[in-house]
Length: 498
Image (cartoon, rainbow, N blue to C red):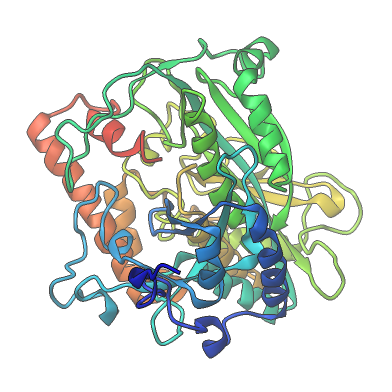
């Protein structure tokens, strides 16, 4: 037998720490049972893509052979801290060569953290060759404690607060995005570098748009959208509809109600797999709010929310009887929480320079003030009443937002309102921010933001966004773009990545 010295020493290199999961008791009974099922499936899989959500809402991943994943599943996998310290243009926003000020010692020197797969999220991706699976992980420090900068952990903590009140938040996703056709232009590397994005993907529109829900317009994208829908169903996502929205090739995808953490996981999986699916067919999918393309309309992410009693199974927003335009006092208090924190917690739901283009008077169905009304799409919070199906739709978010932070911020605000029992105020609430700079200032001064995220993540996120908005402001000072137009900087920064 031929000796292979490279496989005899350090064979766990990059694969976490032996028995990391067991040593620190990181799985509950459901995860342990799911892990056994995953191990049985690995013989039918060639590769596994291990992913987590960075602070910007982008999936970061490593791909490993299935036999390597057998060790990763229970040992975790080492990941670079790079995605935690770079802004959206990969400019270094958090100094990893000195005291970062974030309060996470492991960032000094950009040391690795350990990503532990959550076996309940393991999915075999349909139509892949080699056969590839996808799994989400949770970030940990080397002492087994949750990483203070982990987005998914923020939402888990908020859900735990609901559980203490015998409540469970329920989320429905309504997501607008753009399908365009790649035209074979250059790959976008010209002038690229850390903090300097190259050109965005070269694309063309797939139809003229501006015929809302027109069957013929949907038919013009059906050769991509229909098999995409079938793939989403095969992934186990509760797909409800694929619709043609107003803009050229603008689609809306909606999903049925899910528990909050499942909904955030679904949003990350959905966005990532939509981009993969379209790219392999010569198309480009983008969740950027308003691309710099002729005739394009803005896209939004409408987040449907309700709360269920885990004791009775009752929707606590539902009023007695089936009267229209009525919700329970608990539901009204939840809405009051959303409204009272709308300004200071806007950043997690609208985290880009481009996202604030949509929150403007020229987009009549986008919110411009902090208000609520029954069945009114011009309000920030639209209430849909109908007995046990009563819920609220917050229309402020952009489709590229970090799903864990966006959902967590709204649930945090809603729970605070619900538990204090305060009804919506009759006087106007503070206005929504008009720009990323304004949102960042409100976020930085917010005590609730620190309560929600913890000081390290709030500090880190503020640094990331300060770097992003400062680069934009410097570019504008040098280039002096026309007022009100989507800039080339925004298109380069967001259209490809998101």
